[in-house]
Image (tube, rainbow, N blue to C red; front, side):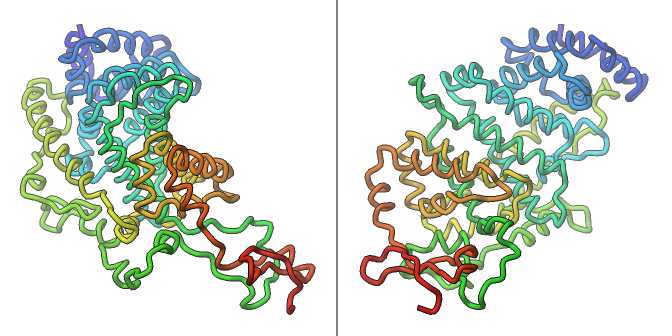
Length: 468
């Protein structure tokens, strides 16, 4: 049934690249039944699910996703497509295959764009629908009851990493990259969330949890410190009276007695250098991989795939074979990159942070990262210990303050501290042993001639008159 539907769709598509297909799908009441047909055909059949994520079916899936994105009002097709993405593509480890097929579907895209992670509208719709499905309480509880699909989770982490690295090199963040990153973080937040009422066994492998934790900490450490509220911007401050705000990197290294010098900390490749390496060579060679990924001969031998798979029905078998080979190459890239996202000390975490943006790509980016860390730390002792090992405790504590760009970051920061300390005596003792070393002047106190300083005997802050 699915093959018959695809054959008829390809026959129509070969007559008119966009006209007949668009007219059929955009007709009222057509996209919903077609999405239901695809769901019923592929849900309980792995071969049909693989066929749905193949390049031949991209000509059928792409207009449905585009229709969902451009439809002015919520449609039945969006809900059904969400079920397809969750129960067929995600659960059967076909997320990478679906994303690759959609990238290769258009004649304007090439296999290099998959390795360089250049998102298209269909990619954004898939990730957003997946995030909506995983955030649903009923769907989330069912997903946690079974083992999380490892390949789909790996590709999701790889996708978020790639979007973040790409945005760090863009002077003006491109909307498609921003939307892809935001939706990807929503997916990871939903996956790592656990229901306290329902005692469901965690279906996420510990190795992937540690990799995701390291990535989230590095992305958070790369951000500039939280700035004071904007209402204080016009206040005149006395020269030299306010101490400099510590950076995220200095927070990570605050407990290291013999920290390396600054040159050693920034000796790794910067994001700009990595993105330059990812550009294709003038001779037309394959691009080098970004984020410090050393390209191998196997990675450089990615096959050149057929561009217009829908209009060339006779070449579908050859295109499918090439897509399978390319997916295998991409899987190697994903596994290689994730194996490099590892750190054993705060210094190594700072080096990983060099590749990520220092400014928030969108409003709420910091909040998403802190919320992800809070979910990761919830009743996962190995994750809590890893946070302490990487110096992330102080980094999370520094997020417990008001931020104009992230109104809820303080609340998520407190929730992260709560989850970090639950059942972990070592972290509780570490936090209780922290002592104040300096103070930050308050503009309101400066206006009335007062300031905050530390008591020399007790070490506690106290308010005194300026010049005293």
